[in-house]
Length: 401
Image 1 (spheres, rainbow, N blue to C red):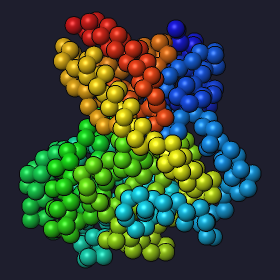
Image 2 (image 1 turned 120 degrees about the vertical axis):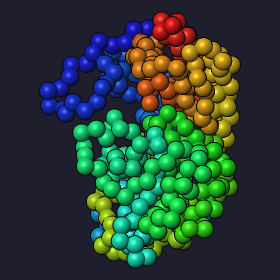
Image 3 (image 1 turned 135 degrees about the horizontal axis):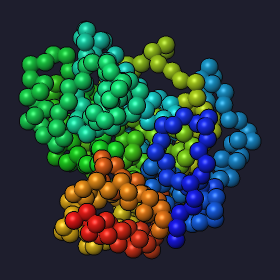
Image 4 (image 1 turned 90 degrees about the horizontal axis):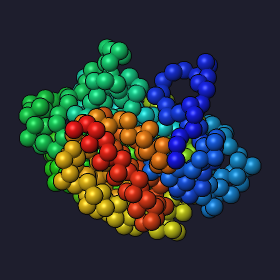
């Protein structure tokens, strides 16, 4: 299979993306088609967004009904869907309150505002937040400052102050970096780093962080934007460690493609924001809330957490069997249907080669193949991913040798 000819680039669209030269027109399940009628297996899921795949037969009519009823009203008024989705997220997380926005960036920005207000309320004039190397939290000035990627920060200084950066999974380094500092108010991190290369936080480290935050009266803020909403086989990736954060930003998979963001809080953070402290125009609109409610309902009805765990384990085992130990492959890692294959050399060209062979993937951190397909992925489709991807990886490694 060969990819479609490059689509004509519009002179009116800002040049912010290095795009693959195809344009997708429609999808069904884990399959999508382009303007030339070519079919692709979607192992990217809109970058961990399309939880239910494409055109899910239970989701589509619900959204059609909502569009025909009410799309937007603003937060001047009560939105019943907010109460419904918030109650469900509280039930699933064991936390207490929710603020709704539209994107992961907004959710992370709100979390950082919560941390600062938490500090100011305690009399700390310049609150500081611990963040991690290789983290990615967004591209606004504040979330960019919290991000641990000099490449995406370049050209946007001066960055926001108030962040202390430490290596991942190193509690001793964290303690050393914060020793004697009364301004620290929170630790902010992804349970599994996405853009940074699919790097999981160790379960023991999660438990150590929870204990440390309790001891020092810090907020534990876990960015579950990419790794949450069932992707690892539990509703939220941190739940594998048996802990509960104080603040948890969500987005991506929460609305199965409809933009939905949320900040879920526990008791220590639930009342930090008061009227006038934060807000949004689009956040919590009736359409987005319906998308979130229906996504969770369908996930429960169809057993998609178990499916993510089972099919993800099958896919990871197959990749480890075919690529693990191979010269040129550093690691196969991840959990559920959030997997990364790290090569020893940059492999960005695999994105185009996979497209040419009917597979959609991404490469992040220059050398990590990222697989975040819809949670409806079947074992047969997982095997198809392996059958397309593995030969292309081996071919690239041979060429680079």
